[in-house]
Image 1 (cartoon, rainbow, N blue to C red):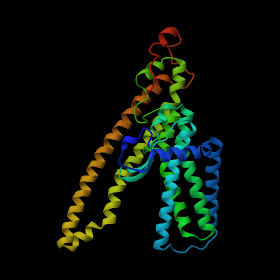
Image 2 (image 1 turned 90 degrees about the horizontal axis):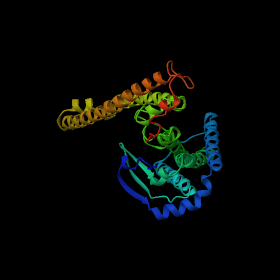
Image 3 (image 1 turned 60 degrees about the vertical axis):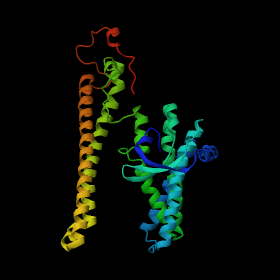
Image 4 (image 1 turned 60 degrees about the horizontal axis):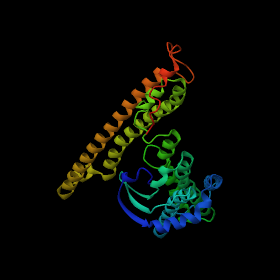
Length: 330
């Protein structure tokens, strides 16, 4: 979904024009009700469980041929487009037009996206509907393909269903600017999960008991999120270059001498430069997370637990503790 993360997707190209997407979204809008979304996601999850249960019981599997892999990939791409149409249908359900469906590069991965920039005009409940609709659509479609593929011993359906499940799981990952990230942003009422909560009007609002109750749990959740994000970044920064080095067998190429040695040297230089850029960006992001954690931990120490007034504040006049209340969280 492209929501506020649209500029982060590069090399964008249109797959379905906005007029076509909006027309399809109008017809699919009834499927974007909360009850229907929950039912579709539940049925998809049940279909996946049924398919995995049959596999665990010993259902015979045969290796997929090259043609079946191609058909499976095509079916998976259809589930990915169905995912984006889910976002569009939810936006249309909220009374706003949907934009185009396109393809681009997020980080280093090719992704599909739906331009739902107008989601920022919606209240929180509407934004959450748009955030969650894509995953619900894809779980329903992918689950049916997977269960049907296992039941009928149809390899393309099985492959497409497994790929759709992996894509839905990736979409829910909160550390990349995909659906899971925006769901968490909208639940916490934040645009940036790394920026400190203790900023601007939030600090002033913490001077009141109501302000403390409003900020304590979001600050605690954001600290936990950032620490998990730091661990994720460390795993990616350490694991990705190492996996690439192992897959490319640079040592074997180097030992081969001649042109292979030159190829190994060129690949090694490219990997070293890429790893340096990755580690530099990772270090900056980790520093931002730790600084924000430190600031918000200070806020938690000053405010104490919800409902508790720090010692010495009981005698403060209420009007004094209301100063600066007008600040609004970005």
